[in-house]
Length: 327
Image 1 (tube, rainbow, N blue to C red):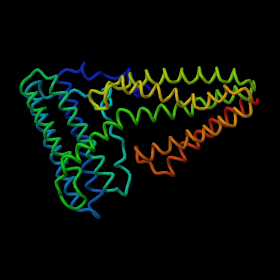
Image 2 (cartoon, rainbow, N blue to C red):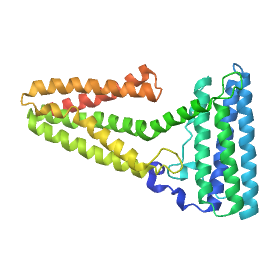
Image 3 (cartoon, rainbow, N blue to C red):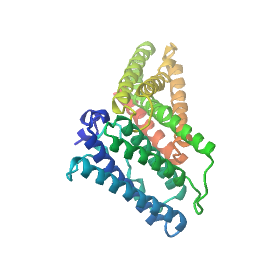
Image 4 (cartoon, one colour):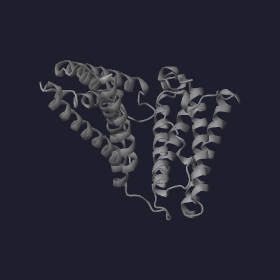
């Protein structure tokens, strides 16, 4: 049942035929059109002007879908292959955030801008690989249309105010930094800090030997870093999602995973068991606070939720390690 989440069971974008690329674009436009219409329905009562903006965007997505279907019928016939975003490695997902009510207008506009930027990146990438002139032209035109949507999606709540180009470029640069470095680094830091708690503290309390605990901590940290790094590289080549080089993301994830584990492994270089343990525990609290801060600062996770998720998870793993070590 978990096989559909594995990147190895998905198609690579560069392996898709031109017909499959068109089919993928059609299904993606259908998804985005429905999402924008749902945004409009949820915002209509309190933000009627913004709701109208999303209705217009939904209508344009439907126009794009019809254009793509017409071209598909012309080139390949009326049978459209069943291929969706979840079938292609690295294709940006559409999480069901829009099903949550009531809608926050700022969060919705940001999400819409991200969606349109991802769509534009997809069309630009697809256009470069297309060999048929008419297909390449349509994909390029749609990329430009999505670029216009990016500006539209970032307008003010109640007035369609043109955005400053420099502000848009800064926003895009920050988003790219988050996608390429912050998200992979945060995932690695969380995995390295939390997953190594149990083996390190289980070994510490089972043996009360600081050198053995240090060796186990080093092995767990480096092993987790290598595993997480390769997983990040294999999960998404960044071609469609725009998340950047898989090598950069893999290195970031691997390094941060290793550092997350080393933080509470290095104190066991101290010969005194209890001094090393107290320092390691203090470092764990610092690590968990840093993770919560990154989630709040860059991922816009509310402080309470970030602290609850990270501290609760860390505390459970920490307690498991101590209990196992004392068994």
